[in-house]
Length: 99
Figure (cartoon, rainbow, N blue to C red):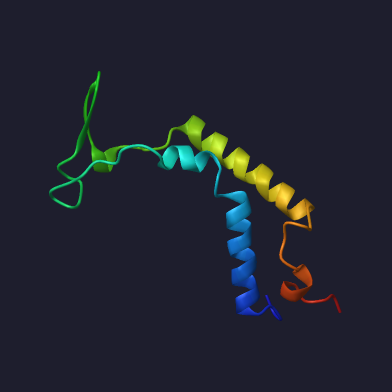
């Protein structure tokens, strides 16, 4: 976008991520024990389920329900962030004035 300086865009982006992505359900998904791997590529790690073994690299780590919940929460937080000017960095610094 013409007229927006890089430093302001970076500051706005970081602020938006801090307010809208951090401290969401993503933190729950990130919590817990992560397996170690001697091979360093996790090809030696498997998950055992009632239906057999699943190679770690083939495993989906986020269910459809979890992804839906995460996207809904982030969308709601972005909406709130954009509706509440007190949470935002000064937009007049970032967005060019209309001509």
